[in-house]
Amino acid sequence: MADVTLEAQERQVLYDDADLRVIWHGGRTDYLLITFGDMTTLASGDRFFADAPCVKAGITCLGIMPKRENWYPVESVARAVLACASRLAAYSDRVVYGGSMGGYAALKYSRLLGATTILALCPQWSIDPAECEGVDPGWGQHFHAGLSRMGIRLEDVAGEAFVVFDPAEPRDRFHARRIAATAHTVHLLSMPMVGHHVTRVLAGTERLLRLIAAGQKRDLSAFANIIRESRKRSSQRLRRLALRASRNHSKLLALALVARADDDAEARQLGTGFFFSILPALLGRADRGDALRFGRRFHRHLKDPMDRILAASILADAEGREIAIVSGHDTALVFDPDLRRCVHRTVERDGSPSFHIRVRMTGRLARFHVQIGGVQFDLVPNDRAQLVLQSQDGQDSTFQIGDGQDGGITFSRHGLFLTAEPNGSIACHRPKARSHESFRLEGIHRPGA
Image (cartoon, rainbow, N blue to C red):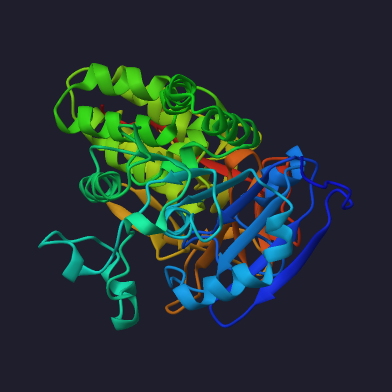
């Protein structure tokens, strides 16, 4: 059993050069976890790949971090391993873990590190095109002459290797098969419909502990359970399945899939790109009720105010409605011809005549206007900060948009926010944005519809 008398949670840099940095994290385990960072986790201070679960679970870890997308140069890794020899020697059970570029390194340097178990998620075999027999290995922008003949060889691999990949991802499938053909102790584990996001789908303290235990026990059944459970509700898998279904005109399947992302965390993970890709496809079907319900639910999770405005506009158009600017009082911004200025009143959703204020976007700047008959009038703040009809050429009528409360948006100019006062007035004079300064865009009945 290893000497684990080192203070728990100890962390220090053991090696540092132009290419990589090695961080030691003292824990309580009788095995050593060695992690390699990928392209999205470059060296930064004493952070290392999978440090959060290691700290949480008290795992003893040696974190090897790249300083750029360098695929871990052999000379630097060799010097680093030599510098860490005494720490490595204290542990006979060494688990090496990494994803993508880090997965490549976990396999490539497993013998040098004396690995007993390797957890490689969507790894590369090589990114040298000359080695890949006409197949584009990907990541060509990071390849250079110094990486020639970088492929994983039989003599590089030690220990039992478990490679998790999506077989529907052509490049990852190519690399996985070449790795398996190269080394004798490689187990290929399929994780379909997650793309090159295996590492993200398998992230988390509990999953990492289960992956390590399954690898140490050589338990392929346990691996299969982890993969099945992780991908079942993965936002990556849901996104891919739903997009495929919507493109194949399978509306019911697409809606059934997105309906599974029914909690706030999963809805946020599906992402803006997914929302704007699938929503028009679903709204284009004859029965749009479910699609509209999905759109309204997802709309509130959009982070960017511009995205919220765009989504509200798409949904209103699909419903045959017009956009109203609605305040936190559940009142709509309208133009009062008698007062000759903008006020806010109870939202009229039944088509009753009213001059609703509209917003026009130019980049991230908003302008307000009102259409009376067939004529459009721009609105600008007067000397009392009230929105009135623009009466002179060249008056600045632009407002900046920002984040409001509860998924709303704010409108500001010169550091002051548009506000809906409880007495029904509208003015741009508040230095801070609170509930009265937060607005949302909502579909209302289109007159004549």
